[in-house]
Image 1: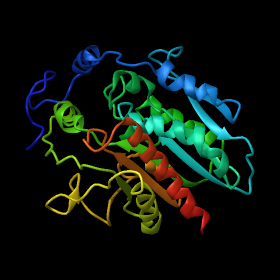
Image 2 (image 1 turned 90 degrees about the vertical axis):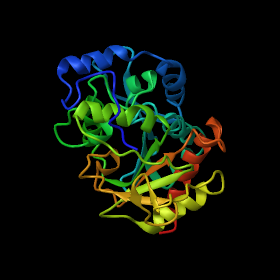
Image 3 (image 1 turned 135 degrees about the horizontal axis):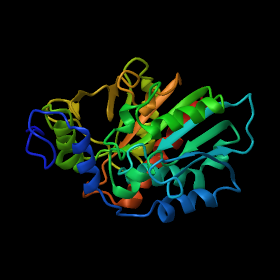
Image 4 (image 1 turned 120 degrees about the vertical axis):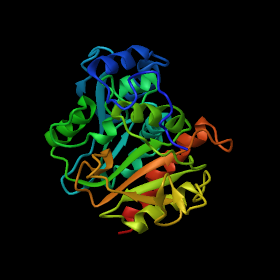
Length: 305
């Protein structure tokens, strides 16, 4: 199966023009509230943590302010932990899991680490349930110098401004059925290429860094998540999303070369979570709990070093 089927925008064999991208943008609509579902929860944490606005999206600065949370007792002797969510706005549990971690677990870990949390990198994407930003750019392929995605550039500028020498970075994501039904066909149409679709893994898995995989760190996270939800089995080819399994529940990607959020720093320990919210075995709450378990499992491992 491939994603070369007809997409309602563009001409077969031709990359999207600016007019095509505007036509795609015109098809998008707000489906949920960033203010109600995300911002209100983040602002409510302003007493427990240091709340910092690091920008706003140019499409509507008043509607889409960008916020980060930092642990209060910031000390230069502590190592810095970065947690990011909502790089792809449609991946709900990444955003809600990041917030839940701060609401329920972060204070205890702040005794040992400096914690930085960016809960919703792409608020327009969150509201429109979208992988791309308004310019039809994927923020999670745009974490590099002179980034074309303002969401990614804002994160990079913010981390540079606080001089964050990151020790560990956990980036929270989902793999959904719409990856094959919508987003990969759109990508194929935008770039005038053919993409082979993969079987969507039924369960949780992790993506490590090919160059710096840190298998023990990944294993600890999987073990923690396994206590609250099921781990995705490999497909018949021994792969997850077309990539060879590195260990149970873990594949590796070239995070820096691909411009992924997980590759934005020189962190020693890096992992991208992938929850499957469309599984009949889970619900929204279970997906959020799995994201929190991944974070705490990773941090518990780091505390043993």
